[in-house]
Image 1 (cartoon, rainbow, N blue to C red):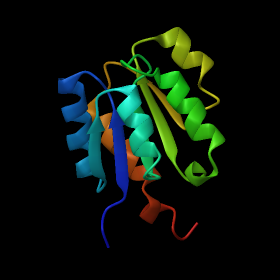
Image 2 (image 1 turned 90 degrees about the vertical axis):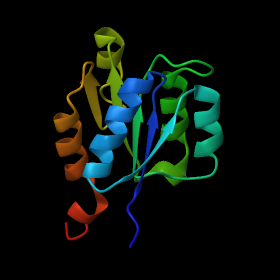
Image 3 (image 1 turned 30 degrees about the horizontal axis):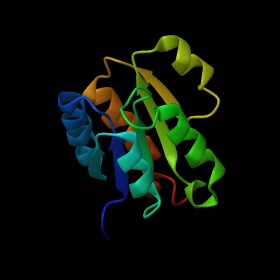
Length: 125
């Protein structure tokens, strides 16, 4: 069995790499996308298990990407983890996402949370 897909939609290269390593350690197959337009194009092709979403990215905002994920039935099982430095905006979106993490996000914290959301963890529940 291959590892489930985790899309990392983050324009800050160092953070995206850290998130990628944390998710790979949690047994996901990470894929980094650096702008909103490319993220929407990729989401038209795949339904990832997890999306780690920065709210302030070029092209299309993270909030619009979140709204897209929430309205499309193919993403019913997709967990969205918002990773943002914008505490106020993150708080307003708390009910729409699985988790809201305020930057800086610890790689260990992301890894542990992702492990809890891994499909194999919930297969028997």
